[in-house]
Each structure stands twice: as C-alpha cells, then as structure tokens.
Image (cartoon, rainbow, N blue to C red; front, side, top):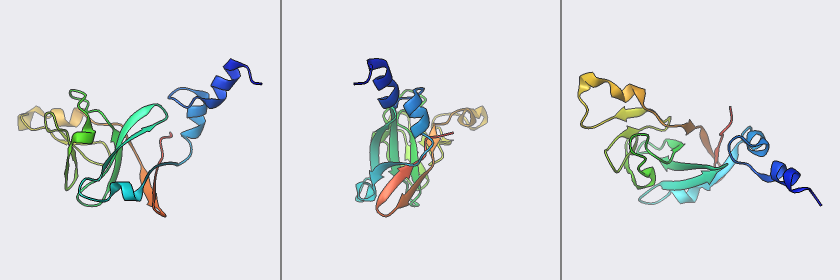
Length: 137
C-alpha cells in the first residue's frame, strides 16, 4: 500500500502538481465532437484543476479558453457565439479562439484597453469524433 504522500504525488493532476505537470505535456481528450453540434456549440470543461470553455465559433474554429471573463469573472459558458469568437454575457467583451480580446463595447476607441486583456487559451484539434486539447508548455 502506498503512503498517503506518495499516493497524492502520483494521482493529483491540478496545476503545479507533478502529475499535472506530466499530463499537460500530452494532448488530452476534452469533449466528443457531438457535444459541439446543435444550436449552441459551447461546453464547460474542467481538466487539471482548470475551468475552461470549449466552443466552435461561427466560422467553425475551435476554441478552448478560460471559463471566466477577465473583466468581472462572468461565466463564458453563457456567452453569445459570434462569427469570430465568444462574447461575454455580462459586459459584451468578445474573445476569439486564441483568447485575444477583440472588442470591448462601451470603451472609447482611443482608450486601447482592448489590447491589455486576454484569456488563457489552449490549442485544440478534432480527430475521429473527439476534441483534444494541449495544456502544456
């Protein structure tokens, strides 16, 4: 029987743990392709202690980004899908599949705050009916 410390070291996969560091170096299945079909292709994903949102924008691009908007922490799973990304349901910030903030309604154009905000984003691919994400370095 393993000691509790060794068991914890081998089985925990949250951020900063040895198991999490190892597993992040491999492509991980995050959803079935069928989960992104239908009227609303947005799926919450929890992997390695991170809350993410997986979506397919209007152009068919897959995105895997942090689930909470950096502005007021609104849940992007309730966001509105647009041609080039996912719009926050609270204040309308628009994020593309790479996590770049494309639009901040209500901000003056000369403010340029939009370039200072972004989301953690991870590459993802679709193969054989599954979607895989890479959360590594």
